[in-house]
Length: 206
Length: 252
Image (tube, rainbow over all chains, first blue to last red; front, side, top):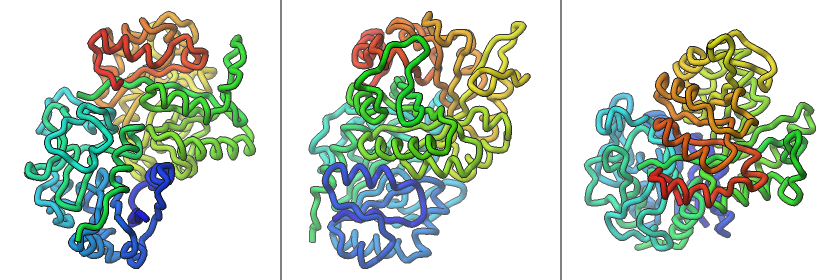
């Protein structure tokens, strides 16, 4: 069973539908017991980092995610959920993340060509940087769907793929059993489903 | 590099994809769910569902169809038609829409764009605009292009983007249905006025029209069409191969 953490941020309909489409038992939950008994955890998220981090902490869910990740349970952060895995973000001030992956989330603004539009929205190609369990069923150059204005930096050792958008934008990261996708696999057609399928095949490592 | 998007638009009335005035029957593909699946499989980058129903029963049917589509089609879905309040945003977002497009609703109540962007984020709010030339000016029309609003199009679009619209669909009434190509002049004018993604609509008749669009309006992000896809006058797979051959960035 895969638990999708519900902390009041974003629309979980598509994520839930895509996992069920793959035959996975997906449960949208904010219950710590359910998260404990899940085989793996997905941390979704849309919106602003500071607000999301606060909501995740206020329900005690932040600690649960960190504990479960430390115990070896596979955790996948998607979009803002991926950004929350990092130490901190510079979106509207400075906010602490979960610290599961070293690195800082910074604005695209100032890092990419001025003529490029922000947010980075649309389909972009993945350029693999390292092998990843999540790439089991996809190939280098496959396209995925992005919507974001901030991205993870200072995290080179953990970057598994980037997308070119005036700079190498961190597209996916991996540190042990902790995974992150800046793009939306649940909106990335066949390629996205293949990434989610690979995640649903991960198992507790410890 | 970000790719140029190809977006089929499905006009839905009382639960079915509607045929154009002089068009032959859509036959076995007039189920919106079946058509959405077919488009997704052949490479559509996004789908627009446009609700042209007036009745409450039709609205309920529409949201059922949206739910059913969103359960089996995993590309971005935009919903438009009958969006007048933030409650309308809520209604379709809960059924699996990713973006919501506003047109007449924003003209009636210009604060709708701002309120929706504040609640759901700019990435969720698409301004759709029906534009026709009058006395040499680009003018905004409402109610599906039937009623002149007196608004100058470029100013209106800039104002809505300033209020939080994250994307703009530009429907040219002058080129719509004529199938002689997109409205290059209008689209260039809009693209140079705003920095959010702009989607071209109205006028596509063949593959070449899309190639011309992306070459002559370099800042355009997407091309949208309905009947040419429904009646297979333009095959999306073939269109994308032609775009690729012409050096236009495309998701294959």
